[in-house]
Length: 113
Image 1 (spheres, rainbow, N blue to C red):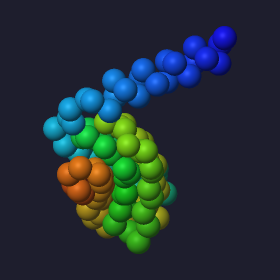
Image 2 (tube, rainbow, N blue to C red):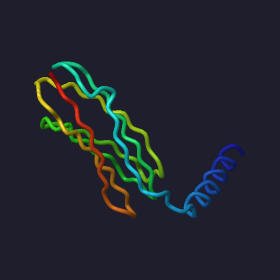
Image 3 (spheres, rainbow, N blue to C red):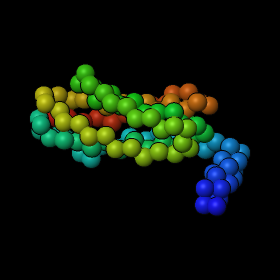
Image 4 (cartoon, rainbow, N blue to C red):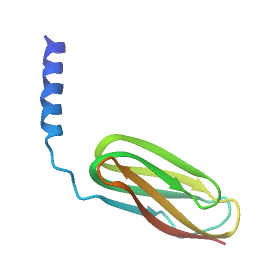
């Protein structure tokens, strides 16, 4: 009985979800700090909404990047953490890909003294 009820709820939820209109495609990127010293960890919050988000890629501008799959979600909030080992000014870029609208970027700058 429970398994049947669970399957019914999943089918109803899917039927409702598939008919939803896409949200306006928006991407945001925030850094927990905009200045740091070498070795400090900086957190980056990527926020996104759209119609069918596939994933997020973040380029930390020091030769490293990270990614996170969003499996078709309509909205996402993902936190990435990164430590810069050298001094410099870094232009971090998050790219979110939506199956309906394509890729969209957001950037933030971090200065490591």
